[in-house]
Amino acid sequence: MTQVRPVVVGYDGSDTSQRAVVWAAHHAAAAELPLVVVHCWMGMSHSGEPGSMIEASDNARRIVAEKTAAKGVDLAKQAAPEVSTSAHLIVGHPSEVLTKASMDASLLVTGSRGLGGFKGLLIGSVSLHLASCATCPIAVVRKERPAKRGILVAIDGSPQSDKALLFAADLARARRTSLRLLHIRPYSRYAITRPPVPESEHDPVIQQAISLLPGDVDVTIVEDSLDGPTVPRNIVLHAQKASCVVVGAKGRNSLTVRLGSTVHAVLHYAQGTTIIVR
Image (tube, rainbow, N blue to C red):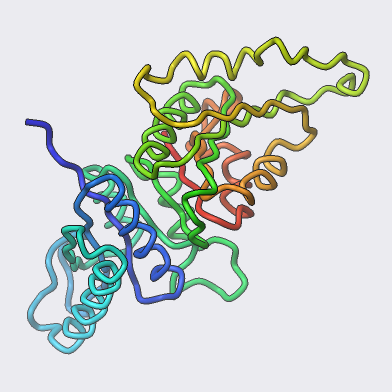
């Protein structure tokens, strides 16, 4: 039997984590998966390895942590009562605990920044760490937008772009919405004088992407190929019209890094939800 991997969402009581829980609950409902709400807390008497259960001697703090986790579960159940939702209360730093949790998750969900972030930060250090280190796909939530806006996936023909494409197709099918393939062609100073690609011809990157999709993908496919001097800016602009944007963790020119520069920029500036796949 295939193991069911739950959706895991980090919750610390902040506004952004509340939005993350609601988004995660809606996703779990659409994907017909269980949801685990994880609350991380560092007990004062804790001296063991990160990830061990909270010690009884930290009673008062434990009660506060349990109440916070329970609020996260209640929020999820209000958003999606049909989803099997549970709380997981763990001692440890959120970046370490959630990175470990991603090993057994189908999707890790986090807010753009938590309670510990400085006011005005576009993305917190924990969310940035998880975007770089999570094993499974990770959704960084700022605002939840209606699913009817469709799923945008940015592609470039790289292996991780292909994985992002397949994840986005599954997401579009689960959300019963359209899938938009966006390819920003490499910029050239000759782009202005370069003749446009005839409408009868497919962009080869998009054509390759379509060939990778399973034949039973029952979603509307929208193709969008364009030239642009700034790839991240174009993705961010197009993401404004989508329910979320899906990207591979790195592209063709980012072989030695965990998170490519384009994805890093999109993660910082996209106003909705960004999903990173590796």
